[in-house]
Length: 272
Ligand SMILES: [Ca+2]
Ligand SMILES: [Ca+2]
Image (cartoon, rainbow, N blue to C red; front, side, top):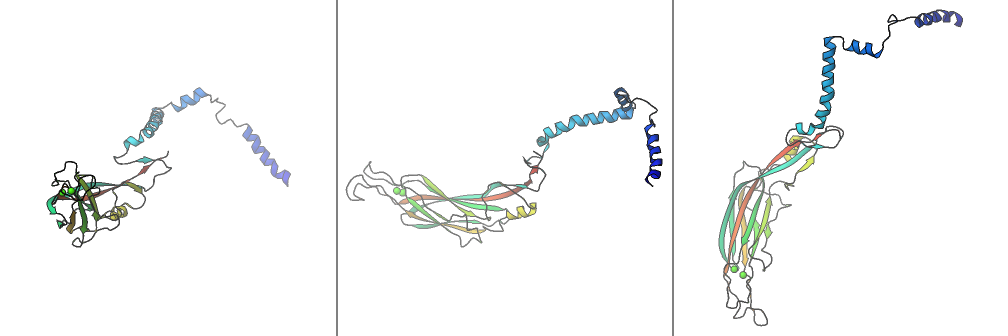
């Protein structure tokens, strides 16, 4: 059986061995090149191919300069849905009030903000003063800086973010005048103003950075003034006849309502 089947197969092999499909023409390198460039169409095709060979390395070498402004190229193996999140702050409103407070006096500075339109990040309250009325007969008695103890009363503001907010403060050391300190009432959860990168949907990220209508209403900054008065150096009664004297201090409270615009741009990742 095997012998019978092999006979026709041998014949085919024999035939294939003697077929010369190109009529015996020899395909050397000169012939190949002359065939590839024989027509105008082939020349055009080669010219276009050559142009791309040159253009691709140039394109990738200068890829980052073709990106839109704000796009960032970082290392990685493929494009992902990462986002750069940054914040632009603007002063929406500022105000300032100065009052002379007597020693031991409590005074409430008030400021009202009602506009619901701007997206607010925080309200900054700065308490500042110098030493303006301390005097005495002894030139060796040093002036001391008074203490304006501040306490924010937030009952008339519709709402604010407690973590991260500062609602009290004081003037610090009696040796430093003029002096100032700042309290910050946060109106957006977790807001620091720092840029960051995160994944997820753009709309969800933008939705995190809204004030939810917080921070509208009447802000009250209660200041309690404690004078601190210098005495003559060395032993003796304090305050003695040569000690300084004063009535109180001129206190300025300033308000700054800060609006925030969030910018969410896609991080562009290319092969390293
Ligand atoms: Ca003083
Ligand atoms: Ca004073």
